[in-house]
Length: 213
Image 1 (cartoon, rainbow, N blue to C red):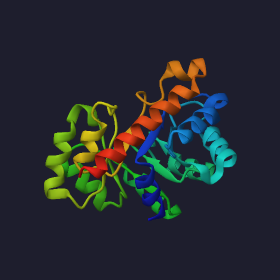
Image 2: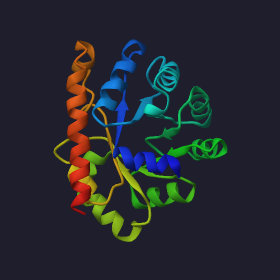
Image 3: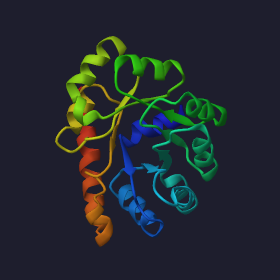
């Protein structure tokens, strides 16, 4: 439950995709300066496990580090051994859930339909990632939460500053944000202040939207 509290406290999970080891600490520090403390490193990037190790050893408890795009139990195990505190999948994989439960880590499986959401939760998902959220939209979340309001949801994929508040008002416990928070251009140019500024905007958007629920 401590992990879920961290997720709610941050309100935003920064999805870092395709980063390089030499920039990951700067990205994480820029996000933290803006109030985003939950950082997901997608494992489809070369050196992802090493980047997870860098963050956990370099920043310690300052950030909450997880692994994303995890599709099998062995990858989940390697990420956990590297220091990941939470695991995220774009889809539903029972062996990933089993591995996370074995190691006592938060698991956020991906789902799209109500049937998938319920199945993911029944199998042990702590929070269900609704993906691709940008295609489905906030109204979809609101409708699904009618009968399934007991299942915590986090929308990911297509979430930006234009729809973030609507997803929170629809009942999501947090949002997952990738390119609209960490642009490739900012990373290449080393524009860490831009990332910090956007992080602040997302955090404030979530805060205000929560106060309106």
